[in-house]
Length: 249
Length: 308
Image 1 (cartoon, rainbow over the protein chains, first blue to last red):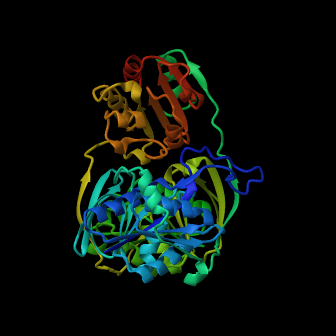
Image 2: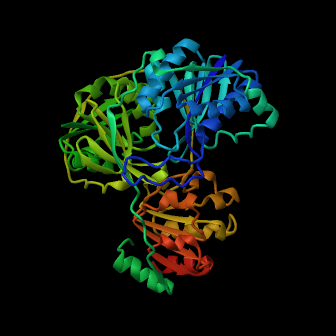
């Protein structure tokens, strides 16, 4: 079976982002970009499915600028067989991304689409669910364990207060939560090999999807700064402040 | 404006976050209905009918909705959602699972985890793990929104809405529920708790966390932990508060033996009141704490528990 793994190029998780002075967005000039951490987990899970013999081919796909090729090369160094870049310099909202991915699903007919549960830039947590909705596939979101068995998969999901296990029909969209696996590091020989793996370049127009959004970002501001409060000298003083000043106990 | 609040519930019980979501709906303004889709969910419906500001409670009681499976619930919302200007739910495990699928079926975007309502079509939401706040405006016919419950004060339960049966049943036949492993606890859920007591590396051991649990129980709160405490194996990883763990914003957050790494601060800095107890007076946690106490947590935490 084929596994499709959509990945996203985002600000590296170690970068402390700053808001631009004109409040139009965060400043992404000259900051380190990486593969979204949740997408790395998804790539790892897909590659493990191939290593187990469950999957026969792993295809990485990304929607983004030309530079997002780097993330596809990373995915291929980690074990993806080939990749597709849907190139656009515009900001693509979740619904548009899901529409493009739905077309790729139609073409490639994967049994599993394995994705990160959310990207750490927009923090939307939407695209996998939307893709499942648009294609009519079943969904196994926020997975911490995936067991594929023939035409079905058993998914252990992180829910509020614990774990839930569901059984879903394939084809399905599965989204990776933090504890699904520990992604490997790419080894140098694999990084070299990845340079020779096939990478197809497409545009949203090739899939008949127009990049436009009904969701506009009016401004982006830094969060309210929290200033240091006071030091109290004793537990008694703390109790007094909590009761009489903050009134929270 | 007609708003449908999709309630988070456990059939026999309404989740407290629904009262916060109704508050967000009131901030938007308009007729507010609440949907309870579940199985044997009359008790949840009765609780929802008491929420102030709610005009009508719709009950879709069917086995297909018993375990809140996304495919079935989203199909229901895709069908009835067109009749509303806004669909709202809490940014809970169920809300995050179901709502984007429903939005796609309605061919609209979703506005995730709003923290403020500016107008009926404009909202504020955190991006980059709360390191920036975006103001977004939606031109979609139906605004599909998840709400961060802790950002809205819950409405009172002084209302008395009518309860109506919604005769719908959609079983997509795509998924089934196998089982659940819930952490058996009388403590509130971490992200919904009004009080959170967290421990860090300074707690030193699994046994040391008993002190943290006792204070949390005294305050009726939840227990959290820093990544360092989780990595050291003192507590299970679902207690982790931080950028890669749970984002919490309780009324009172007590950090004991936590130094205050950026990773951790991202998960708790929106708490209303922060108390830090740490031996090291240079610990960065003191820079965000409203009340800091430089002390050994093993002395200060039990003393605090005794005096509250």
